[in-house]
Image (tube, rainbow, N blue to C red):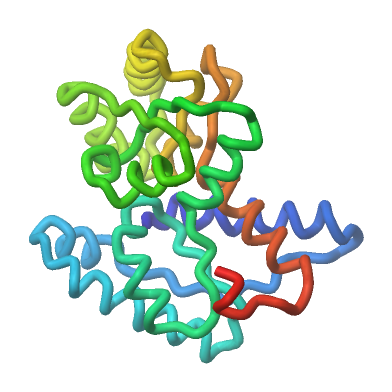
Length: 229
């Protein structure tokens, strides 16, 4: 939910639209950038109903501004995706569904998951992948703490270091040793640090996957009704 991942989303969406449509085409985007500190404080306090209200209100404003579909540019905050879907009448492109589609299309059935501690430890994300037949392996507690701290202390501030890349690659090696045949980069900032070229197994970069799913849907045609969620 940081501005860093928001900028990454914005760039990728415009690059994909230009690639698909050619010429000077760019993506038609209505963007609401929330104050991450406010959202994180509510999350830390466990007041998820307030997080849901805040993001649902933002979603309604985007719909009123003309958005035909919604993209929540964060994995962790999909914990309140139901509140957003209830408030808005246009569809939400769910990041875990798009990721599951990519994992299944690659023929992978067991993945390691990197993300914030909340995403790795709570069922809202893991269970959604599991419902699609994707088995998920999460790092052990110490590794989860390291991975999450790097996200909040560095990546959300645009800081990328070789030392933190080495930490992530060590965690990936341990996930692979436990049977992971792919790794989900389940925080929208992580692919700024590591990517497919760094890993011994396929990497599923959720920001890129999510943006591609949204652009695919936006350019596919007129049926963006809630029934198509």
